[in-house]
Length: 200
Image 1 (cartoon, helix red, strand yellow):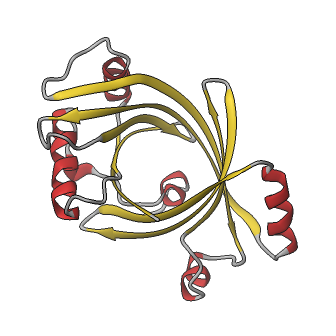
Image 2 (cartoon, one colour; image 1 turned 135 degrees about the vertical axis):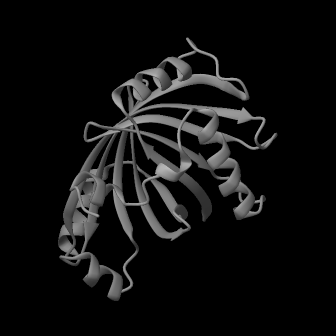
Image 3 (cartoon, rainbow, N blue to C red; image 1 turned 120 degrees about the horizontal axis):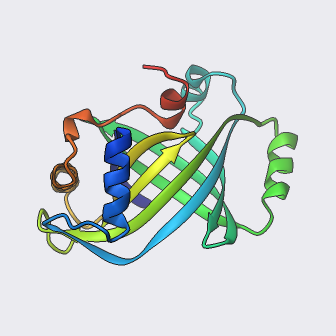
C-alpha cells in the first residue's frame, strides 16, 4: 500500500495552455527541472459500489474508491483495479491505495455485477504527465499532470515518497504550485465526482 499526497487546482484556458507549453518543453520555469519525456495518457474510470449514496457507502465502511481504470498510454491500453481509502487534511488529499493489473477488465465487470455492485460514476481524463524535481525540496519527485477531466482543466501535483514527513511534503507541493504561477489556496478539495457534478 502506497501513500499519495496531492493537490489539484482548477485552471483557466490561458493557464492550461501555458502549462502545456511548459510540460512540452517550450517554456522554462525557474526552479523546476523536468525529468524524462512527456507522456500523454487517456484514462477511462468506472467507479463501483453496492450502495446508492455516499452516506450509505461511508456508513458501511466501503472504500471511497473501487475503480476499474483503462489507460491508453502511447497507443497501448492497460487496465487496473484500484481500491483507495482517502482522507483530507487541511485541504490536501492523503490516499492509501492498492492497485493490481487486470488482464481482462470485462471479467471483473461481470464479477461486480454478480456480487451486487453497480457502476455509479464514469470519468474521462486526458493527461499530459511528467516527473520533475524542484528547488522547493531537492531530491523529491513531483509528478505533474496538466489535465482535463470530463473537459474541465486542472493542474495536479502528486508526491508518492512515503519516507518524507507528510507535512513537509504538503508544504513542498504548495510551494511547487506557486512556482507554476498557481495559488495553492485555490486548491480544489472536492472529489472528481463532486467537481464533475458541480457539487460543493
